[in-house]
Each structure stands twice: as C-alpha cells, then as structure tokens.
Amino acid sequence: MSFLSLVAQRQSVRKYSNRPVEAEKLGRCLEAARLAPSASNSQPWHFIIVDKEPLRTEVAKATFSGSVKFNKFALQAPVLVVLVMTKPRLLNRFAMILKKKEWRLIDVGITAEHFCLQAAEEGLGSCMMGWYDEKQLRKLLNIPSDKTVSLVISLGYAEEGYPTRKKSENQLKKFPVTIHSDDFQIVSFKLKTVIVVHSKNYIHLHHSTTHIQHKLR
Image 1 (spheres, rainbow, N blue to C red):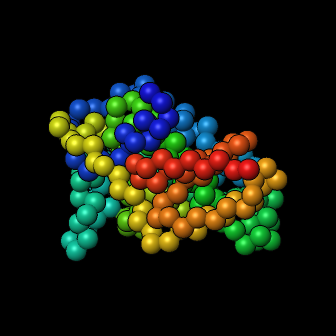
Image 2: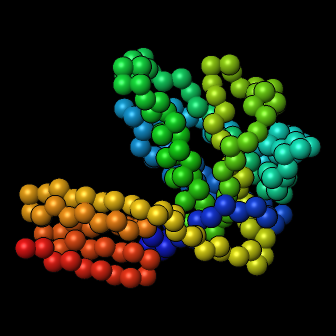
C-alpha cells in the first residue's frame, strides 16, 4: 500500500466488532509509535495498554459522562490505549522556556499518528479521544502526578460494513501562496486549497480535481 493510500484509508472508527486484537498487530503499532521523531529524540511518552476487564470498561467510562456522550463508543473497543506525556529532559525544558514552545505536544501528536497509521495498515480501526476525566484515569491506572494524560486511543476491528468516509477539503475563501526561489520568479496565487510542488522548470498546482501547470521562464 502506498503512503497516500494508507493516509486515505485511516479514519476515526466509532463502531467496533468484538473480534480481539492480535498481540502481534498491537506490537507493530507500538513499534511504529516508538519510531516516531521527537525533539532531541526525547520520546516524551508512555503508552498504557488496557484490554482486560473490568479495567477496560472503567477506562472507557472515563471518556464520557451523562451529559457528554460522544465517546460512548469506547465501550465497544477491545483495546484502549492511554497516551501519557512525560516531563521533558532538562535541556529540552530549558529550550522550551527559551523559545516559548511546547514541543512535547507536537511529539505526542506525531507518535499518536504513527500508531494510528500502523493500525490502519494492520486492518484495524482507531480513534483519538481528547475528552476524558483525567482525574479518574489517574486513579484507575495509577498515573504519577508528574505525568499528563494526552490522549486515549480506541483500537479494534471496525464492525462489518463500516464505511470509509470521504475526507472533505478544507474550504478556505482565500489561500494566498507566494513562492520565493532562485530558480523561479515570484508567483502569487489565491485559491481555496493549493498544494505547491517545486521542480526545476515547473510549479504544479492541484486544486480539487483540476490540474493546473505553469511553466516559468
């Protein structure tokens, strides 16, 4: 499968069958997550795998409440993965303060996406959940106070016939693109969604299904 096909296949799955997830597949998802890039290779994350009852059900219940029910599907997922963010190393902490950037959040997002892309490669469905009762999760999983719960990811086989949804474009009224290069004249465009590809003699613009090609002098 090509990478673009894999990206297109991955989607948030919210209906699961009761088929268990094989340990080998789960292991490859974790390995993909481990290989994710991070600032100074700090890998500021821990993955907590929850697949045994009654803990799995209790963790699932911590992702919704009586008034907020959109994560109730977590009860169906045979595996729940709690992604925990750790404290940065001293050098990273200093750099984050100096540059006023929380690189750990980027690192955690990348490793979560690696996990979910590998899940799609394995024929599994996943969904990242950012709504949960962190206090309850800490209590259930004995998470130390110096660590932060970043995400809960549901994992399992989608129910039979679960559709692959078409991913709509981000509709922007104006999206200006300006290209500066020694090999190109400066070109400005205003299109809704633009992907710009640099080559020696061409700039290729893909807008929806229309392919526009401009040759530059």
